[in-house]
Image 1 (cartoon, rainbow, N blue to C red):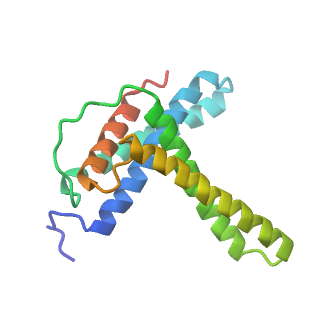
Image 2: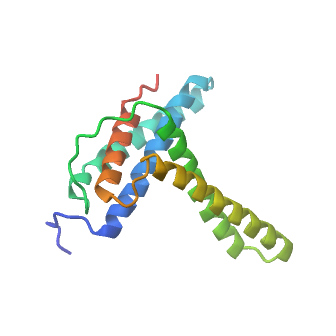
Length: 165
C-alpha cells in the first residue's frame, strides 16, 4: 500500500462525504440539545460526545484537500437554518431506509415482513422528496462533487463553531 498517495479514491471520497455530513448534522443537534439537559451525568456524556465528534470532524476535514474531485472554492458559509433541517431529514431518511432493509432480511413472519416492506417503500419515497428538494435548492449538488465536498467543509466548520454552553 502506498502511504504517499496524494488523492483519495472516489469510493473513499464518498465515504468521507457521508461521514462528515452525518456527523456535522449530529453535532449541531447535540449542541442545540445541550440547553435542555438538566441531568449532570447526561450533560457530561453529551459534552464528551460533542468533543469526540468535533475531533472526528477536524481530522476528517484534513482529508478534503486530497479528496477526488475537490476544488478549492470560496463559497460563503450557510447562514440560514433550512440546510441544517433539510440535511437532518435526509440523514434520517437514509438511515430509515437502511434500517428497514436490514429488518426485512431478519424477519420470518410474513405479515411483519410486508409491513416492513411497506414502511421501507414509504421511507424511500420520503428520501426522494427531501433529496429532490435539496437538489433543486442547491443544498445537495450531487452531480458536482467539488461543490458537494465544499458544502461538507462549510457544514463541518459551522458545526464545530457552534458553542455548546
